[in-house]
Image 1 (cartoon, protein in one colour):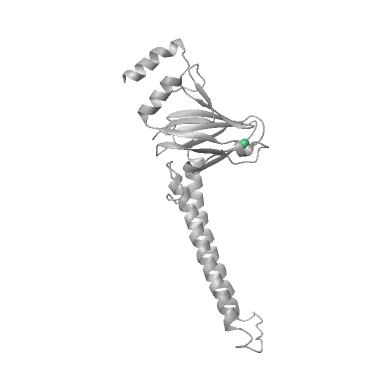
Image 2 (cartoon, rainbow, N blue to C red):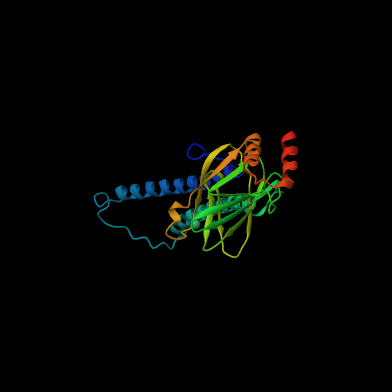
Length: 235
Ligand SMILES: [Cu+2]
């Protein structure tokens, strides 16, 4: 999966594993089904069997072929459910302690990101607000507070394997931890009006140094934060 699309979050591999399990399971059943289908077409062709057989499906000998397939499919279902639930718990329910928190607002038709400034505290005077550009630091656990201003949107970062609906009137908390530097896509994955298709943004995953530099360059010059910036740089 990594060769098709980069894995850039701590849980991307776990999501890909679920997708692979489903893909392999379904492929095996598909091939098996096709094999039996075509085998029977030729085996029981009119030429080989001019007189059709009549199977009532009542004897144990007949029904066991239904049960065998039925129970095998159930085992595969359970396998998929177990791995899905483990991943769901990891991605959506078990939120690790954040090292930083960002605010994300979806609106027709742009993403507004609020990054904490040099003090790493959200909702303070040194916050950095950007449109369609999210800057995060490699290896840092982030919480996001996701909101929608007008209609339903869905915050989607394919390289993170992250997708979360944004709902007007609600603040939804989620998390991610970037594991690979680079610039990647952010999409809106919920039909949200005529501009939905152009509601793309970019995520920049930077090293600690690059990220500190970006914060320093973009933080609004609040006098009280100057000292903090300097102390941050001195570290
Ligand atoms: Cu949208």
